[in-house]
Length: 610
Image (cartoon, rainbow, N blue to C red; front, side):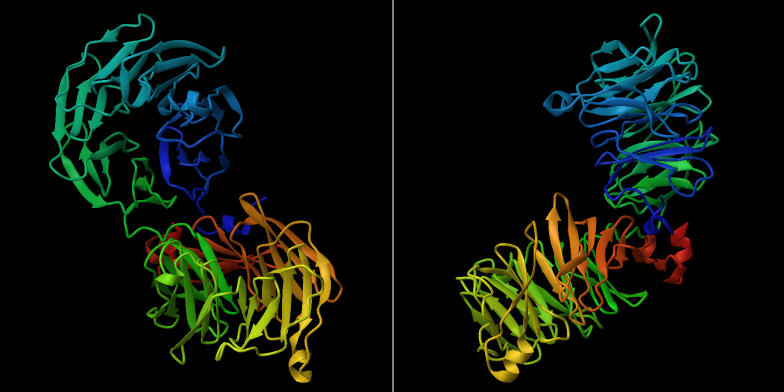
């Protein structure tokens, strides 16, 4: 079933696109990424109709049969397979794994036109050919190299490169190589022109054309400077070819190789995956998107945050700030971020880098207002409430700052902390696992120490939003609830009440506005599960599984926030139902939508949707 994130410019790759192939006769496009996800988009489809992961990461080794019904995939573990482009069912597969497979990591594959054979070139220098129906290997020839292998239009000859970068056209009946002129510019790729009369070779230094009938060199173009040629693609009618470099595409007429045009493709960290379809030349980038010009995309969302009307989507080292349904600005951090938070009033953005000190930015202007210093590098926890910022230091203890007063305080002994959303109270855990509630303005006790519900140390704390309540999770995974309001009014120690015991240890707890529900995040493998607990009824009312490992909960309303594919932040209801998507589009555009349709979009979003 299609999900909400499948709408409005989705892409299936949230990892670098490392392979692509387009069949001009059928209009079938296949792409693959560094994690091994393969997507097949047939003519007439606006998004890939088939997405599957047959094996390990793919580096260049995709090959479509003429007509687009079969796709060959070779991966970095040495596995080769041929799959139906309708349903992904394997027609042939020979698997490798571990060190044994990595020595023959595949770099080029091809299916013969009649579908009888599959050929591969691997990093071990072997050219291999299998009989698909019998599942047997016919040949394994040494001394070959390059990044491509191709069958001719009859499937009787195979085009490849030797280990010196020279083209070889081998007859499969006689196993003899046909004569071909020696190139002055060694090649990494060789392919037939669409009409089958020429061999096009390309390497870092330039492009060469040879006649198939006699192997004579008929034309060449040498590059001068630049970043070198990564790949070459052919226009669907064969009238032009496009040379793809790290930054640009250069179009030449065929067969005279006269320059036609050059332009930036906008793909970040392009590795050579490219195709020429009905919309022109497209180049795969490290952001998992295809680019044909412009400024590129913001890239995948790595972590998220939010409170009330504000949402934060982190694109590596940039924070996209959303208010209601609109993206209002972008904040440039000093490096990749691990976590982000926004205060309840929507004034400040707290950033926790993967490396480097914690920093605070003005949400309205995007300017940095506080650098928390090198002592906060590697902080295990941080929070912002009102004008107070607090951090649990990697070296031990808690340090906090009052932005409004320009004041900082520190305690060296706390082993855990939480900050109320208004910045009124700072909760800390003592070395023995007891709880203290402090006044951030002075560092002194704000109320009497809450009484433990059992002789078990506390491990996690969270204040309930907009209420004087405290949630505590102890070492036995028991969630307890304290009413600190009565403690403050009556000047007595608060007595806690056990709510529920969990089977696994949570790593985060939130108290949601109103005081009825608590949310707990339980890590599970590469993801997590969120549990929503009715505090009064002492029962789990919702369990949402298979979420992103960095999924967050908005303590204002209980909405679940998680990074999603295609540069998006996905918002869910407490029961896990998809509610809203905030998506970055290429070239600085954005869109917000729900099941009702588009809620808001940037002025140029229509171009990004294409």
